[in-house]
Length: 192
Image (cartoon, rainbow, N blue to C red; front, side, top):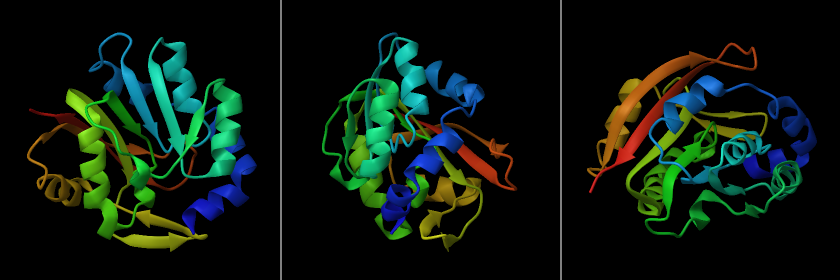
């Protein structure tokens, strides 16, 4: 249902998000990456973040579950964007960083553990993972999109089941699109 929403509204979503300045979020993430790092942009949407990372000299594996958004993002960033879902991730020790900006919030809570296992496996030891969720504790269906919300306490409790993931930090931000929404931002690091 959520993917179908983005397929139907791909051009509108692309236009609304491709120029948002998320530089402060990049700074938290990129300071932990080596030069020429390989980044998984998970749920890349418009391709805004992939484009920025590429322009900074990073290597990027961009993917999105929406075929329509993946096609628009591919044209925008000038490299392939893989049409795949989070469940399709099947890699081991591949990425120096994972960027999941406002994307994993569409994963049903019952499937979150499985997705985290897949992503953790794909991340190299010492690699960092940025993720963001709408601040809250509910699961909501809004305009044919599922939202799984976390606050600092519920996310900390969730991530505690992964002994090889440590929370580097979390912080709360306000919505950059001017909506009445707060966001939980998290930076994780994979341990041996």
